[in-house]
Length: 294
Figure (cartoon, rainbow, N blue to C red):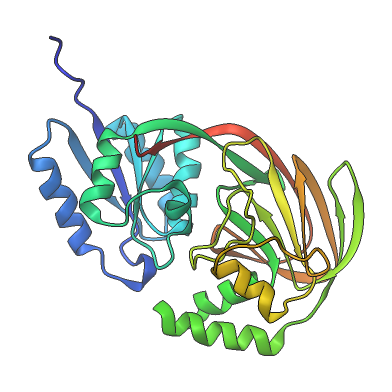
């Protein structure tokens, strides 16, 4: 019987993702691979020159799988480099929300997620290409949530308390956006608190914003949050029922052009991207290979 292939794994670790020290994760990874026939190389992201240093490490190690260790922002960053190097992306969820990992059914414990990294199967998922420069794996949005992401990044408080403080601040300052949305099939003008480009179904908080979303269906959804009555918010967190289209509309699309009357907050996969007035986006079907539970 032929010997199973020995694989090389390169772990790209965000040491402060989610406001938590990752020393235990580093130790856990090294301990796990002591009993494996495979090898693991650890690379710590420092946020300074990662765009140059990570590709250099990939070229040096020549891994079979590239592993993102962190939250949604880290996963997005490492996924870009996996795409450029034509490598499958594996995930260790080590952020504060871990929305994409939840979406993909990846376990939250270190040992179980490491088992998926090594034993999981590679499956293609879609990406949303935004403004021909960036890729969204999970959820991007304009408006209230992007404003919350900005406040969360700026604040000294992390975790649930920091999130709660940000929510209160955003709710007190919320403003309607005047938006033109063109999917190629239809064009609408709307007043909305938030516009979501959804490749997935739910945020890391568990809020289901796009109940029929599928990361591998060759399309994405544009979710228009026109009003936010209490019961619509409840639907997102508890036993889902269809949204009232007077409050929340969902448009399926393979491309979209969005223009806002004034500049609005914008985020991609949990990373704040500043204020924008115009966005173009299109689906890239099956563009990224991701390692998922068998």
